Length: 349
Image 1: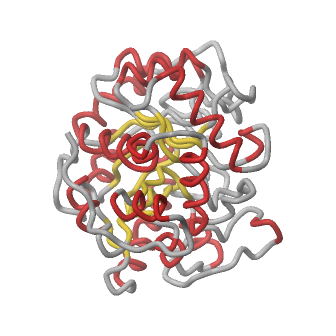
Image 2 (image 1 turned 45 degrees about the vertical axis):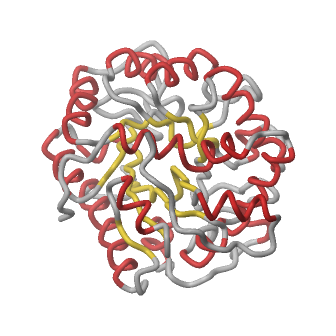
Image 3 (image 1 turned 180 degrees about the horizontal axis):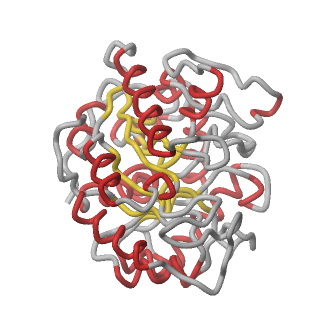
């Protein structure tokens, strides 16, 4: 059961149907990486930007003004640590959390760090709710106490893998790739601890064997925060129909990425095709949004930055989807998982 809806807001320059959907159901994006740009070049989340390179290559896709303009009520901010650059992987995560909190403090209430569905709905009435998701459990460095620390700081999902093998398991591609091995004993313990700490497990980037093993042992719904599907376009990072059914059986949600390299074609129709395939295989409660804006990708044409999201909403309606289904894709499915894995700690350190 959903817990209400946000107060009506206006999103001009779009059809009445699109305006109504976004006003009633501000969208949730499961993954974007602007905090990396804050780290490397001092990117200001509260300032409206233009992409620094033609066709929105690599970054400059997300900021608070464009999130609001695009009808997004919540953005999951990726927290990334880089084994080849960061001497202390945990400190790199803490630094990015501090960057986000500082941006919230400077936002005049337009951006607020939240951890619950209730807080998201309240904040989305007048601004953007910021949520935190870690990309890669290598930042735990084999310590469950670090997971407890990050949960206390407001982290709401943990991606088990990124682009390198770690104490939990093996990536779909990258350093230490191994398609024959699944989760380690520590990886299984991390899933159990996540569920105890109120942290959603994210299965983006993990190899298939670890993915399926995680689905078999998890007791609570999971995300695949940003991916596309091999049933539309075969690619090393895309997940197949067996994986989609496993996440659906788990009660989770799958966020579709906005990158042509994953989609197989450039343009919003490709995003629609991946969403339609997810619905065909796993049902209407499975699809969500996982843009990967600012993640060193070139976004697909028409979704070059956060302000453009209503173009996708219109395309979904034009494809014959009902208002209720579009609302599930934009918000309801991601929100349901957030509700079903409630945070353990209310205080954010």
